[in-house]
Length: 386
Image (cartoon, rainbow, N blue to C red; front, side, top):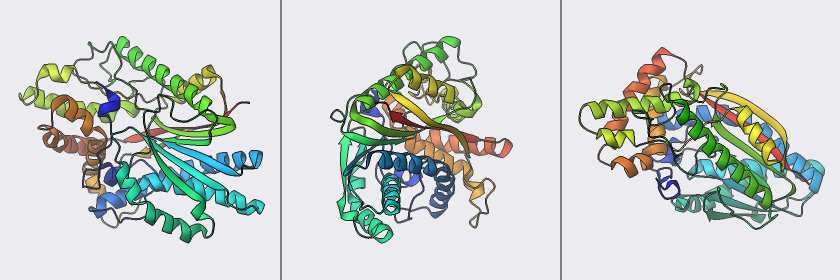
């Protein structure tokens, strides 16, 4: 599978698009893209929890970067930006952090060039169409100086070079680095599974880990060439706390999708050979694995390394005016469809997609009613050594 050609979040602003279902990214600043209010409000609750934990890390990195270097201009990249309102909210958070430290020091806001990167199949048009409203919102929040913020799209894989040497001061990436550059080799024995699972053999787990090591070390090497000395990165990756790469905390959501697919195999709706040859190009690392690769590559100093959880159900422990708790399985299935549909269509064709996610919704809802289900997030802040 050519992941660069296939992997992209579902484009547009339709009911199953990524823009409508990015449950695990930064909070959507408004609901003008929404066609399903309960799903959008559900997204808002989860995203508030995530941003409340990652925002201090970003602010600390930006403050240290600016105070130590006092740059006349800032060049910032968001890698794996995807599309939809979340994309520009990340930009807004970074620019606001710069503005905050500048005002504290009595400085004018420097010119800021923001590069938004994702694979060529990403829906960049949706981002560009929302830029005028983004600029207006930023103007209301910050006032003067916003006109010196420039946004550019950069298509390409972050597992290769994207920018000239020493041209960036800050890099952000959220929920992208768990995606591998390719499906690992040597997964022929992983029959009946679509990812690492409790029934996967040691050779399967090793193949996934080695692909992660190769990809993440390559990512770090290229970014070390593109960042100036003292430049920073804040990376948030879907991961796990456990040392077991096949633990439920990171693999369960894919195992439940495999249940839906295997049921369709048993009913003759999907060919068994097709099922046995399908694997997700994804690896959810532990904080120890992330730390190990950063230290091994050697170009960066680790400032912070944190782990936190977000419940699959956006309304876990929250007051819900629309009683959207009951729609938890529906919301999670929609989010996963936005993420995985391109991969499924590429391998199985588009004739099965609706049926797969109809079944998946019920399976997920059943499991969410029985046990605690959470996404684990690994966040790391690192600085380019001199």
